[in-house]
Image (cartoon, rainbow, N blue to C red; front, side):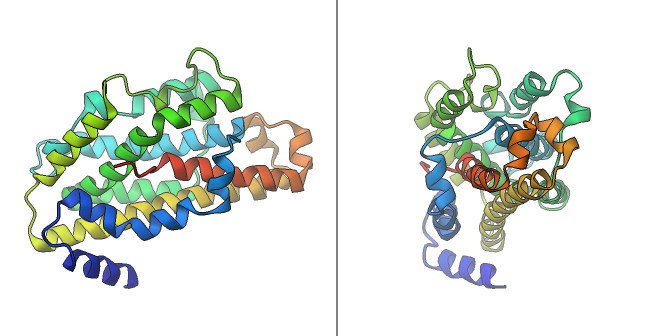
Length: 274
């Protein structure tokens, strides 16, 4: 596999580096590919819609539910214990709070989960049972990405959607982390202390690349869902996301706006200020 070949080549060139640096190196190509899209640049202009944000929260709920349940179940595993920080990092409850704000108390019956998100969730549960050390790659990619970009994204989302008093923005808040920079240093230090065989380390690096690709697939799927179903007049999805009928009928404009969603999601899964 091409991905595995590139990962092993990069790993061989930096055998003396810390695991966090190795992950950053092997995922650099995927990161650059996502960061330099026109969609990413569009989001940086501060454009995001309520429909985009709500569907993003739906996918993040499914992803973090799987990730955090597997981290909890494997919290005593030697590779997981050093990077297990539920009080500081857990995202599931904040996301649930945001979903209740937008969808109401019956949000569990109303949210929409795209197919790619379910595949990502399945992978997280699979490795939680079979290879718990792989969870390190997913936790690092998601948590430190969200922590790095959380404050900026929160402000942009609040301004774009006109949200007040932090309502609907709990996902971006990390009240248990007083200093993101110091905490990231601690997290990297703990992760670098994990003892792995060479084979295990290479496998974790491959999983880090896979984690990034899973996220990109998720966001592409979300874009396709909005683009195809809404332009075809899917009233059920439109009602769920509270999208005006006038916007659904404006297909060219919708396609342009929907494109911005992937940028939001891509930024969310990892502004690499690690």
